[in-house]
Amino acid sequence: MKKALATSLLSVTLLALTGTSTTPAVAAEPLKVGFVYPSPVGDTGWAYQHDMGRKELEKALGSKVQVRSIASVDEGPDASRVARELANDGFDLVFGTSFGYMRPMAAVATGTPGTKYVIASGYQTAANFAGYNARWHEGGYLAGVLAAKTSKTGSLGFVGSFPVPDVMWYLNAFTLGAQSVNPKVVVRTVFVNSWYDPPKERDAALSLINLGVEVLTHFTNTPVIVQAAEERGVAVISFHSDMQRFAPKNYLTGVSHQWGPFYTRVAQEVIAGTWKPGVYLGGLAEGVVKLAPMGPRVSREAMELVKAKEKEIASGKLNVFAGPIKDQKGVVRVAAGSTLPDADLGKMDWFVNGIVGGQRQ
Image 1 (cartoon, rainbow, N blue to C red):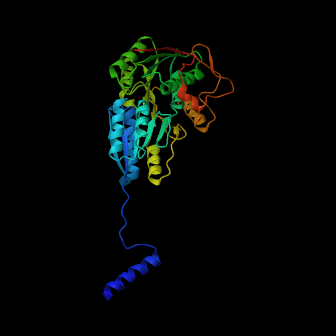
Image 2: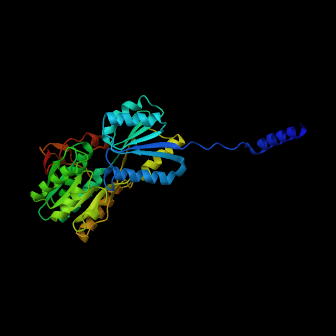
């Protein structure tokens, strides 16, 4: 009895002196993070780039996170189902990597306050709901500068998925960048009305090549545009990923997006309890938008010009959407002396002057 009492008193004395308990600390539960992709991950493209970000998050945070990724989730009811299942499984944070997930996941979020949802290309916010996007237009402008420096006739081509704001502001910026080099540039455009449809993408690319375009770029999810250009000897600028291996002779560069640091930071904020909803927009300065290494067809002069413009954009000296800017119908969309606000990017539904077509396949 006396020995037990002495041991107890010693424990109390140690606790008073050190402020610590002899009871072993309970390790914090890992943050459960879900990633939802609209297509197969593959080895290039939209889902691939986001999955690379997932891997960076896991590498950076290790045992602090438990991660699950789900690919090929359709927008709409399927997205709602997956979001609800992740919440029911105790996931703390869900990254929905598609604009089409915004509305269905927002509806789920209202009934699952313990889960935070962050949606790519999303603009809605709530207590547990946020969005994030890239300044595609910054990379698009540089791609346009390079395309115009490469083309002899000023005939360029673009294959897009849907004419939605993200795609529109990349296409418009591509055209403006090209026009900064050659004001007579024409960008022939085709939309395939799908985020993932390799046969349609290839048909669209070949139709543009048959019209005589000298440089192709795209906002689609597979390398088939790049492959078609290589087959026909047409210069090409990829989107989403570095795709030089698909066009070793005719590749110029690629506009890619890097999400690892963003995903890691958001997870750290949720762990620390400091996360707040909002809409994140990252570009060249933040390292979210990057150009892939340039290919053998790029001249030294073109390379130097692109690098100079890249520095100007990253520093804020050059604003891609500085006026005056007119649309196809001659309507002034951005007045001289002003710039398009970031808040208006998500409302973009017009083509700049110099874009031809835009019809769906």
